[in-house]
Image (cartoon, rainbow, N blue to C red; front, side, top):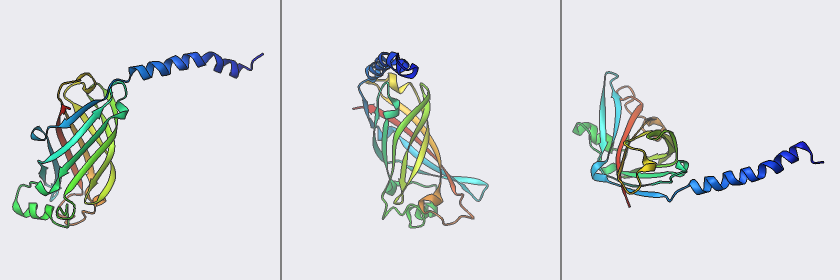
Length: 196
């Protein structure tokens, strides 16, 4: 007579096999998108003197997104921002942000986010976990994302989303002016993706 645990495994094998086949069958063709830079924008807002805030923008960017229907965890978001094109509310702030105490754009001309795990909490909301590289430093980062429509049901159509995260600028070597400028930076990425 078979041992109960062996018998249970023997009975479950066909069920597990069917489950695996069903899962494989439910994974659709990857949806590939390019970033529409003319309709996309990223901003970074930081507290200023603890009473107000200042916002910088990175208007030039490029990137690609791959979403796999049935396997959103295989999503890849790869976006690169042109740090040399940074915009700021005044010339003094702009000069400081471009200089070696902040983004040091002469040495580090790009900022890059690569996300490799989309976890959906609803058809249009979720998180993307990945890595952010700025000023030569790469750190884990997670974007809270909101899609304008279900990205898994938009094959062949443009998809827009907003992603937000907060980083500590000190983690990226930006430690100057801590009495004047806050350490936590709120980043917002608004992106429009078009099918490739």
